[in-house]
Length: 238
Image (cartoon, helix red, strand yellow):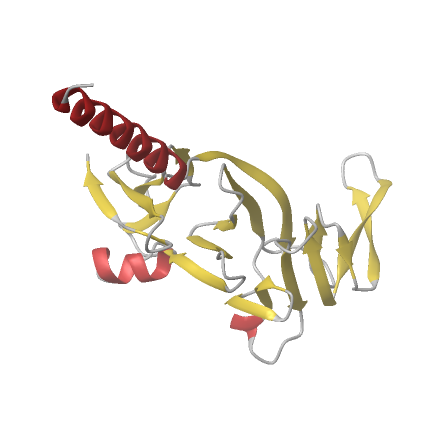
């Protein structure tokens, strides 16, 4: 075989290996999968937190009586919980939620993370819990609250087994909007639920106004960097 053919064959094999390595290194987010809910609904007449979708829950349930005001009949009771640990999912990457409705520190009423490895602490307001499914089997979750103000957190377990908090919408508000969050603050920023787009998580945002919400003003793109094992951030203004 001539030298030029050997060089070409080597280049072809090298290029093929590079493409295969690149493909396997890149992570793709597949979908946002709801796994549960936890928290206290605003102005609810309950004695504790609602917990839904959990695999296990160590808390003792209290049966909240429900009355249909129009029909004046008793409806199915709702279970609430004061203190315990709820687990969403199973296995090593399950999401643990340690909660205490009567916590002396209200901002730490619910703690999220792995078993004995809590990395996010929040108040008891009602929250939706989502898994960010991906083809690398990295366990990542989104915690989302939306009632006059939004709060979005993304956390997960790294390859090393350590749990970390990747994204905190309050910090994003501080950096990009001067801390102007929305609750009763005209023009405060609000965030939508995340969307999966390839190797990127996209979160659109808008403004809260007394007369009504604004149109979407832009989006944040959180692109996964497999080498750094972290998200980059890019703001796109519409």
